[in-house]
Length: 432
Image 1 (cartoon, rainbow, N blue to C red):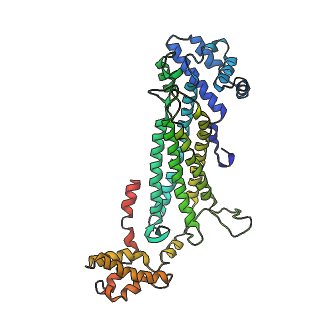
Image 2 (image 1 turned 45 degrees about the horizontal axis):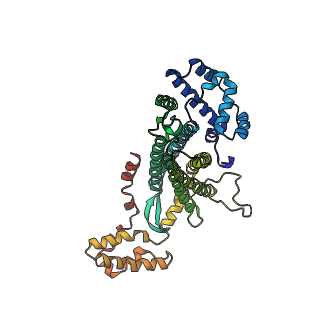
Image 3 (image 1 turned 90 degrees about the vertical axis):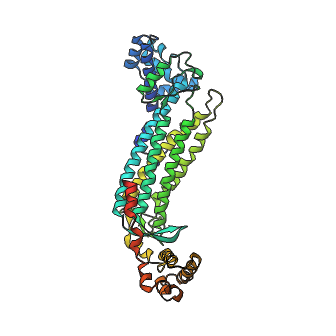
């Protein structure tokens, strides 16, 4: 987590001040519940809410001696509250505070990421409709295949990130649980109603059974979802990078006035933002595996997961938040070149219409094998001429082909608009 790839709101969520504030709220809400159950006096809860405070530097100082962060926090809290602090943390264990806090942070991080996705979806939808019928070449294996539209490319990205949003909503729900169950999760020294009260106050659900810790399969699912979202970021970033290659140049990242592309070559305009996104996606995906390895803890609890989560919690969410915002900016300002798309469409001498001719021949009574042979032998001549020959001309001069398809009918098979007749249907499916 470094400033270069961070945004303030998400960073603030993981600052010590925020973490200790959440710890305080958990402890204070637990005291309110204990007051209601007659376990602690109301004056003690009142003192905590009114005088409760903490000092991050002081907590760090205490922790250096006691080697325990929750005890250090409780000691600092007691210094502010006074004698009534003896009622704080009644029947609770450290994991009750740590796990519930972590889930609060992950829920809030999910809310930010869901908002990021909403902003990206708005941009993708706008650009998709802008280029709904902008013809471009579709590629398979990186090779010209058949015509599509640039709007369809963007509609596909929209649908993908719409699924990502649904996954993030599910991941948020999965991790939004609270555990206030005491040592080994038996509620021996604390009433389950305290957990119910704290959960409601913190906007969480109760954990059905916690073995002193909240089960880490929930967190594994959460971080795996972040990895999937990151992979979708990389997929769209990779598309932009390919489209910006000099040999293609159908679209490119916005190049601002005064921007420099290379320290050595003044002419360069490089896809640095999407290359950066590719790298950030690798990092976010990398955090999913340790989250999965955290699932297997010893018996009711160990802390092998703790050091992992202290790093991947902030790093994964901060990095993905930044990546989504950067991708939104890239797509918002993406420079699109329809004329270059048209030029590339026509680059290979009409080969992109070969399937239509193949199908027309089969409809005219030619076997599929012979139809393929007839089209391919002409197509290969065009391919080997580097587009200097035209497939339409060769087919019209091929007696075997014209014996089944009149030249005028062959010409109709090279209509570009034919490929776009289902665009409205696809857009209706994607955007409703």
